[in-house]
Image 1 (cartoon, rainbow, N blue to C red):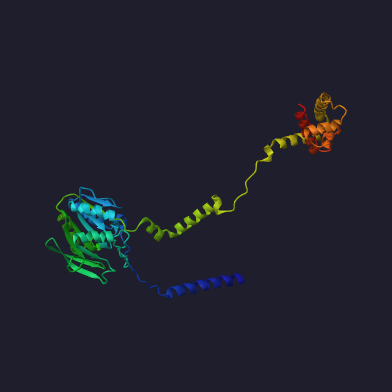
Image 2 (image 1 turned 90 degrees about the vertical axis):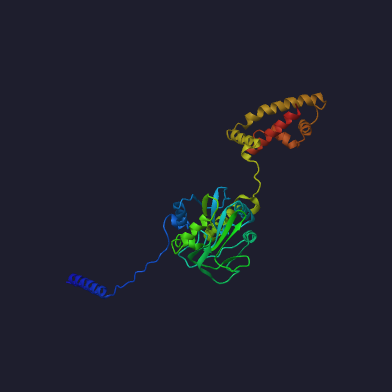
Length: 374
């Protein structure tokens, strides 16, 4: 009976749960949000502009990092942040003077800029770039030098007007003229054009208004035919990118280097004691080991007997020749070998050494006596 009650309670709970779910409101709101392009367009903001130029019959080259312009290049589209040193600016200026057309894009021009983000980082304009533009007669001011948005709905270029949607924190103008978002001036046989809002040529906006027509006019106005180059690099240095995105890895790498130095260099840790020569390879140790082996086999007397006989024979012969036959024989040998009389007596008269150490010393004394009696 209890089993049936439990099953009924479980069924009742299931029914109540289903009723509560059915009475619960399940309304929701579907929100779509653009996050950007996929594929090549995600990493190359000038892909649409490159394909447009290629379809109009121009040879196009995409450059990721800085390379000096070639003699057969006609137009370069370049983020202003790339020209960050005197060397780059001198090479670009020499190319322009020979007939090249440089199109500088200031804001929203780096490849790392996210076209679907409201946040943007203003590029840092180096003095070398500003000096180069000043020689052309162009004044460029970044957002810090010219606070406030500069907007433009039309751009006048090469005797035509182009409808655009441009807005930038930076401003550009010919010397003594009103600042705006676009300016173009000749330099030598070439031309320098500055567009402060680079978005009008990026993938997301190039199809708006007359942005693509302006791009075609920038290429058409060039007197020399050649390759159209788009540089999609970034003004950030390698260390800047590492510090921004991989700083935990750099910290871990620095810790590993410090630990490796501490382990492998003596100056970073306690100095180890100098290891002396191993006693296992010493000649005295081998003699002591052999003597201990022979002493344990009770062969000490047999080993010492030949040495003692040679010492006594040679000692008596030398003692007789020197006229000291009647003197103390042990003292005579002790004086000649430079060792105490007691050790000479023990070496010649002791029946059997008490231990292996005494056997080793006795053998050494007998060898010393043989050496001086030779």
